[in-house]
Image (cartoon, rainbow, N blue to C red; front, side, top):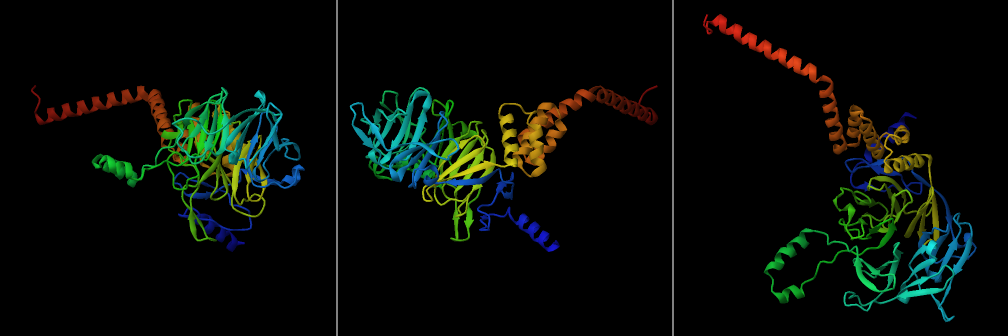
Length: 486
């Protein structure tokens, strides 16, 4: 037993080493988080795999390359079964399908079919379904009954300079504007409610590498001919997006991109996350021992939960990264594996209640993850914290720390709650554990102000007494030395 404990301690101590090594153990995936220094540390599972859902489970036969999944406000899941050219509508428990969409009708009664669709968005309240019909080069806007309202196709605009129009994902805002990720364009193509192309939205920036910066300065000394012939630096394309309230969230699947990996865009297209010091995905490349290579995260899809948490899907390692609304890491879920909870090729992420859902376009399944008791405590605390109930979040935060004392998000939550309560010493203690200099400095200012308020009178009296004592001592010394006249 002593030998086993020693081995476990040594193994745990070796985890923070860089780069992180992926251990291919019996478990479908490892559960870990990151400390304030960016080192991987063991952590409890926030979600556990519950079951994998196939087309047979839904009663519609095998799915073929499910590319997207969306939970609509009518309580139904809409699954893009791309290889079978259909949309499957299933109940919230994913036990059976209630309808399949294989054909859509025009007003004159003629029908059309899908061709390898990739994305879907549904607004049941407005009786609208938006389908990214990729190989038919269009976005279909239909009713939930399958009647076609409009088609969005190749824009007749000089702004759109791509030779093709192949929608990958689609969303719509409250005003009826439609956004679609097309080909490898850096931003989403935007259409007005009446179907007019209005431009691109949320384009990524160019990664400011040394080569890009060097090319920029060299361009000042180039002739016009050389400027035209040089290779231009192009930002990476958006690969997934979601809309929540007045904000659009985007992600990119580039494993070399560090700028604009995940963005939160307001109506003007400004990235709210641009000034935050946050990293989405694995902090360091993961070393895959089975293939002897370093693998970096590449976010292929993003989804915003009803509580404002951000779920990102990593194509490289088949992991779900869950963050709070400020981009603070909460959980890392899943991984590449054949067992339940593991993936081959992830394609889409969705959430509903206490569950997460991720589709696999190679396994042809949707894996359902359910929050654990640890995950429930974290989610509750984050939800209260996000609503501004810092003190109410204290109890669940303490519960989290009782299970995982190194859980950084809980330490920052407790520090902030104690700061709001005026417990500055306690806030400094937990801020130090979380290595949060911002909270620590605020707590220290409060502690100093409170200390001076309590002891200012004593400090003034002590200072006065000390000054008087010094003055008397100096005067006495002068008298003894004859320096002062009689």
